[in-house]
Image (tube, rainbow, N blue to C red):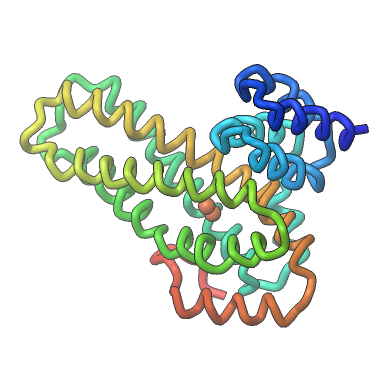
Length: 248
Ligand SMILES: [Fe+2]
Ligand SMILES: [Fe+2]
């Protein structure tokens, strides 16, 4: 049934129909199929002409239908496994995002900088940790995604790469706001902090949710042999880990 609907949408896209007209039908289809089929369907739609940006939106809708699977994934894997480490790092990153959200909310209520600019130092500290998550994203982009793509899953990794790019820019912006706060009056600092912090908190939480609930379970499903995971682990070791990666 889902396959028939997929074929109809793809045929209409191939016949030259404006992808914008078919977004709704694609959305309806992707939110009504099992997660295991999501990647395949999404990939086929992108190949037929739907923008990956639209898939990003569709993935977000789809994820709302699933409970967070983090605990289940970790329980099924040994500490040190590539995915176990990535999920553990996500937990740390989510903690930094909670901190950033609280700091931003507090800054929005303040009348001006405190005398020793404590809040600015805390924002800088969080920006350092978020930028320090780069080896996490590199392990995904250089080790995990290519292995998943080799096995025919290309839609979700493509979306995740785009989000990494957006987030890299915004994390550096957060650092720049805190580093240049000496030159900014408090009102400008507060406004810029609000826009950047909100973007990072929302986008990165959403990104992590999609990886935990869609991409990582898919990777575990399509990469079955132990050898591949062992090889991936040594490639990950070469890239390295984050200052906050929990010790195994
Ligand atoms: Fe990622
Ligand atoms: Fe990640």
